Amino acid sequence: MQNYKITLLKGDGIGPEIVNQAVKVLDKAAEKFSFTVEYDEALLGGCAIDATGVPLPEETVAKCKASDSVILGAVGGSKWDNQPGNNRPEAGLLGIRGALGLFANLRPSVIFGPLKSASPIKDEIIGDNMDIMIVRELTGGIYFGERGRDDSSAWDTEKYSVAEVERIARVAFDMAMKRNKKLTSVDKANVLESSRLWRQTVINVSKDYPEVELNHMYVDNCAMQLVRNPKQFDVIVTSNIFGDILSDEASMIAGSIGMLASASLSGGKLGLYEPIHGSAPDIAGKGIANPLATILSVAMMLRYSLAQPEAAQAIEAAVAKVLETSRTPDIYEEGFNKVSCEEMGDLVCAQL
Ligand code: IPM
Ligand code: MG
Image (cartoon, rainbow, N blue to C red):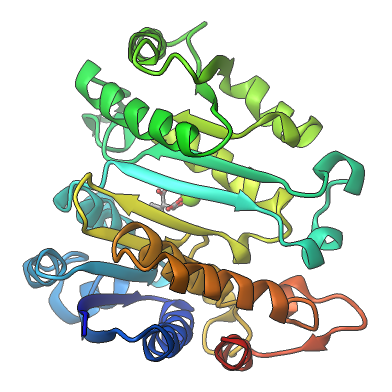
């Protein structure tokens, strides 16, 4: 029987609650699809600062590297706001992305039929099956560029190499080939030199993908087009910071940021899977967080890292079914059962 070693980085705030539900669902999927999962936990973010003084202890990197994949909850909270920038919980998150070489971040924005009414966008604009895949570059750009501060100024640097753009472009073109063969590359080439290099490099890579229809869009226009006509998009490829911003926007079109999963991939089998939302300290410990984004991240892990596509699909189908009757408070509408984080996990397991 196939056995997988999974490292859990529960993190801060609602992180532990949502990861616990995701583990429950993964165990259920393992039982049903005849594989086994062995878990190990490691510290990342604020909890790691409290225990060890740093947001990313070396032991955490080693455990992640020794596993088949990693599930992450969320990190951060106001408790650590007075930490210096390079010792904040978020620095731990960036550190683990860098240490594991997770340059490709896949952020699907899909609307689940029963959730259409939770979207702030009109029905006719969303259409019946909004399904956008944002491919965000995750280990370069302004997040990792040189930064500094002196008495009267501060700076961060957006820098991309041709090789960095090429490898993320290839991930996006490959993804487009598996979908509707349509790719939008988002940049700010009317202003930024790094964007001009980005655009030229994407055009060069496109020669290897003659079947993919490629277009380019400035990021400000893309932010507007996403709410004006999201149906025009299939795969979007963009830089680290633009992808951060656009994926939050796209998630809301799909109803709630509490619903969206993500996969961070390195080119090898090992991936890191996390919801795109944050640690929501305001609702931590209340049992009302929506665990579905983390549960759907487990589905992505089964698909992209563990080669268990049937199990992935079964989890996604179970989530869609449960949403027909039950909602956590963030996506609650009249006429549905209002359920807690744990109840939501139980319902998905029962449906599986
Ligand atoms: C995300 C988050 C992170 C990011 C933060 C917490 C550092 O917003 O994963 O989108 O900006 O990448
Ligand atoms: Mg973000």
